[in-house]
Amino acid sequence: MADSVNDNDSARVGAGLPEPDAHGQAAMLLVESLIHGLVARSILSVEDAVEVVDVAAEVKADIAAELGDSPATMEKSLTLLQAISASLRRDAPIEDGPIDNVGD
Image (tube, rainbow, N blue to C red; front, side):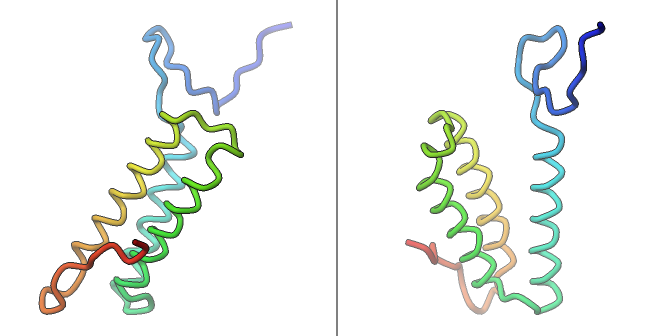
């Protein structure tokens, strides 16, 4: 029987380096785009959007060990969430000034 191929397999053929998960990348892009869209339409404030992402980062840090994440995987996840939070902070109205870490 031929080996089955799983499209979730993150091994890069021939390179020996892990390739980012396509499903995860698409999901992150979709969620970030949705949040930016809600902010642009004034459905969600920038402050609330930043808080949502910061809470997600806190939850990720709290449950990473329970999920079996390695420290490196947890750090990568937190880095992605921090980048999204920083991106949202740039959407803050100039007159309001920079948004501090809401969840801190």
